[in-house]
Length: 196
Image 1 (cartoon, helix red, strand yellow):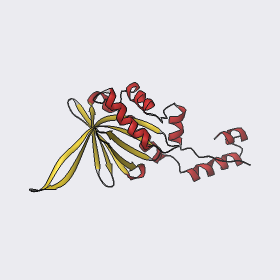
Image 2 (cartoon, helix red, strand yellow):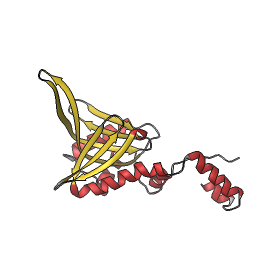
Image 3 (spheres, rainbow, N blue to C red):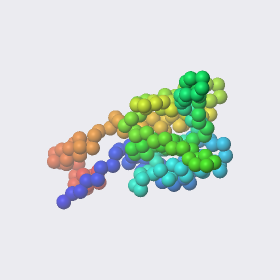
């Protein structure tokens, strides 16, 4: 009797390549190794990634992460009517198999924004003289995260690879059917079939 466990190809690639994180230490090492942003200090960067670690489900892993300044425009009413202002500061950002997590540790608490990957429409990169901005467009709102210009390409390539490569790959059911067809036609042997 054969038992199939489906692992999405993009997730398998990152797990085989060692890019699979569960702890704040692994996320900080990943950010430093691949030059994926910077925080105001190691102390606060650690705190931001600890918030992300605390948000992970038991079997959930981070496929890529980075740190940058969140510029989120919010509208609030005051005595003069509606006023738009920008809130933010340094935030850690993580992409898992199913979610996009933005987190910040504050003096008296934490701020967490979670977006399901299915609700993410587009990712845009904009560069300026010193800084670059990665814009995440979701169904409900837009998140702009500013990073150093010299780091934006690394971040953009990793994030878009994880987010959008999965959309291009086969659906799990179709992949299993194709694999079974190849096995039935003796194109692949039993060992290859069981391996996949």
